[in-house]
Image (cartoon, rainbow, N blue to C red; front, side, top):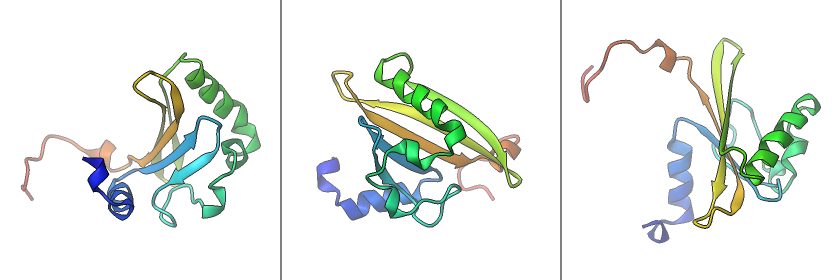
Length: 129
C-alpha cells in the first residue's frame, strides 16, 4: 500500500521508470517532474510552481491549452504525439488525472525515447541473452 512507502522510495521508483514524468495540477501549475538532470527536455526545479504555459515554446502554447481544456471539460482523456529529435524518436503522451468521482485533478505528461523499442523484432523470453 502506498501509505507504507516513503517519499524517497516513491521518487526512486519514478526515477527508475524508462519514461520522464511531469504532473501539472488542475490550475495548470507544474507540481512534479522526475529524472532531474537526466531528461530529454531538461527542466530545473524553477519550473515547480510555474504555469505550464510558461514552460513551452510560445508557438505550442495554444496546443497545450487545447489539451488541458479538453481534459477539464471531459472531451478527451489522453493525447499523444511523436517527434524526431537528434536522431531519436520521442513519444509524448498526456493523460487526464481524475479522482474516483471523475473530477479533474491535473495532467500527467509521459515522455519516452522509443528509438530502440521501434527496432524490436521477434520475441525474447525472460532471462534469455
